[in-house]
Length: 417
Ligand SMILES: Cc1cc2nc3c(=O)[nH]c(=O)nc-3n(C[C@H](O)[C@H](O)[C@H](O)COP(=O)(O)OP(=O)(O)OC[C@H]3O[C@@H](n4cnc5c(N)ncnc54)[C@H](O)[C@@H]3O)c2cc1C
Image (cartoon, rainbow, N blue to C red):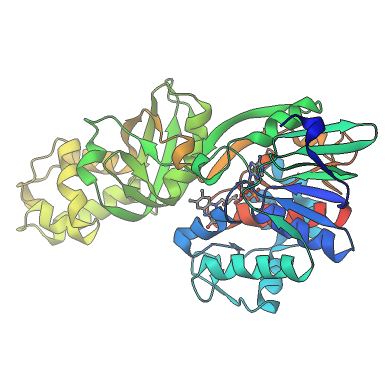
């Protein structure tokens, strides 16, 4: 069908493209203000990422203040001030409580629905959108977005929609099977926007097949410090937290939080340094190991080390330190204790890359923030065009920060459409 022969529809004030967290929230806010809103979604259902998030529990936000949210986004975080002033993480919690989805805070500060069901979060949003007369068209991807004679024209396989304002909330490039294939970037570039190079973030890391990490496959350690070093040994990034060793490398929150540094470095081999007892500095590690050996003189080192380290890690670590696992504590020299302490402090593995966009929870990079009015989410390149959510050059760590940003920017955009 040629564009001219397509059904032209003039009955909406605005079109929102992408029914994820940002698009749904924006559609509700715009509709509440009396806008006739069309929400276009490529998939057969809205909010696919909401449903799969947080292991289908949906980590909605983080138990912190606005400053905590802003600082989690690093340099880009400042962009969020206005959005969070309108719709903070506490407003988000209240929004869902009022709609029958009370939340709970876990010890890590992560906020989840009390029911542990991401579906409850999505249902609340979809019900609110329906209640406010948002027209949600599923299975209808936007194909082009153009501005002609003072009007936006959004073309789909069914129609050309003519509206005054458009909000693009098509997300990034991560988990492309969810519909997020970067469609919005192309339209934004056509309107003159620059795209900060996009890379996978919050994604598991790959280590070489012969890396010692493979021997720890299936082991989760609750508190490791991970440091990425470049080939000259210069620290690129450091983080601390729960870490899971996998058949391909390293995953879990700490590894995923540091993955952006590895993505930006390309696939050049980087060194990942792991501190197995980050609560102790080098000298404290030596003191603890010395004390341990003195108290357990007659026992084997492997047995005594269970006081300090999970059993499954001990032989791997002793092997890396080139220490005989059958040695008795009484036989251990001061020099050997130093070697073991150093291994626990700075054991390294090469990292060959990440599992890429296919397994990345978010996309780092995106629409250059200086080209978007942070008070309204309107484009500085094209009046009437609005942008919100993950399409923007904003990515936060694990912990509910990314939904917080998507909901807040979506809310603010919805108020200005
Ligand atoms: C496995 C996984 C787990 C996650 N867990 C969490 C978590 O627990 N907490 C957290 O804070 N963050 C989590 N995230 C990140 C979070 O999902 C995203 O930050 C958030 O979904 C971004 O919202 P968004 O609305 O900007 O984009 P998205 O949710 O990605 O929505 C974009 C929508 O646009 C649609 N679309 C794309 N192109 C078109 C088109 N041409 N026409 C029409 N529609 C289109 C897509 O189909 C999609 O529905 C997780 C991500 C993944 C992948």
